[in-house]
Length: 324
Image (cartoon, rainbow, N blue to C red):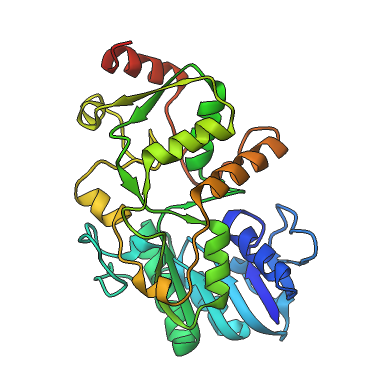
């Protein structure tokens, strides 16, 4: 099998490359060369916005694409590349917001166009790219729609925030209640499923009501050997104090329609098609081991905001909200 990953050096793209290599496939990456390709992968240099001529007329069994900017670039790629199957890593964000609890892949999506030449918003951009892939490949297209993605090589800052915060110790502010659930997928499980799935559209996270914030933070506390104390704050009090869910305290979304949209999806289709979710403990431990191996500071995508509370803001909130 010959796999081409457009990008392929960071987070989900890297997971796709490493999964292909683990299967014994011939794997190539196509990118501008800002980051080295994983060992064993062929690195093809090029800027897809300027064309794909360096790929020539090579034939691939699978092409995987994680593009998150203007859809027209995906449209142009689908018209140029020769492949039997095209895997596009999209997002559950393509659904109109809010989506109801236990929404499936059939839930309505935002209005979008494959011909958009500029980035508008994330949902429209991802949906436009989906339309480009579906238009070009039809029943040979895999459209993967993950929700929260975590795991080694994360460059967004969600799980790395909690791991580095636990490692720092002291009084740690946590968004209550500890029983609040969330859905996630390890980037490696996303890659494994996406490269094996039959064509179609799939919501890709673990099943709803299976994992809690309490479990996540306890595991982060354990694997980092933290000496800190976790203090759970009332969610309404946090919001009233100006704390922004998802951004200031990553992963957390209070109960309500936003939580139903993000963390209560029906994933039965993907599960029936073979989606496997490794234990949360493994994801947390592996991510901490990776962070330690690179010096303790996670990479940060330049086009995404830095997540999490500053130490000063956290102390201010603990003083105001937690009776210590």
